[in-house]
Amino acid sequence: MSDVLTVFAVALAATALLMTATALTARRLGRVAVVDVAWGLGFVLVAATSAVVGLLTDGDPLRRWLVLAVVGVWGLRLAWHIRRRAVGHGEDPRYEKVLGGPLGEVGLGVAVRKVFVVQGVALWFISLPVQVGAVSEVWSWPLVAAGVALWLVGMVFETVGDAQLAAYKADPDRSPVMDRGLWRYTRHPNYFGDACVWWGVWLAAGLGSGWLPGVATVLAPVAMTYFLVFATGARLLEQTMMKRSGYPAYAARTSMFFPLPPRA
Image (cartoon, rainbow, N blue to C red; front, side, top):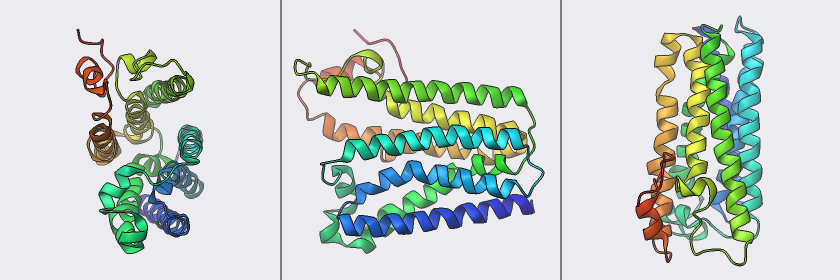
């Protein structure tokens, strides 16, 4: 239990430092959306610090580095993708809605309270399986393998979906709405991929450590899925997308989250 409490405390401190640095960067740039880049990097930071703490415990070393690798690949890719996509753009309208106005008008204090603290706590909570897995022995290697397989499914949906969307935007003869490839079966393949990644991490690092760690950390992927679907993800984005020509018809025939055959 002391090992678990130690890794919890270290991960929380690392998350707090990262969000403090991100808030100061946001004030300098005048954009709260920089937190989206820090989001992916934050999970990598937590996984790395947890792995270091795990060196001092009896946790399984192979699984510890495996979890660090899968979280690292996902987090670094996500941060790179969001950073590249954000170049040349202003504030994300979703954050202006959350804040009640631009950062320069509402002030950094409001942004810290409504965005940086919320995302910092969410990051730490969602990464609980990673923290537990770093200091625990493996209970079931088949569950670890199943988790990595589900993580791979999620990575495919994210990377392929993002690549297809980039190709669509670069096509001068594109249709009004992106409905090609994975986007034909789900309106948000990247969000679905994110959910698969974190359910996979939970299987490998949470439930893979035993039924008790699994039950204790199952709310982590539940919370990630909630954020992706309802809080800051699909539902909020769709409020804007529904105003675009052709999108309501696309939404009527295409599943919002889980990939399904298009409706007639």
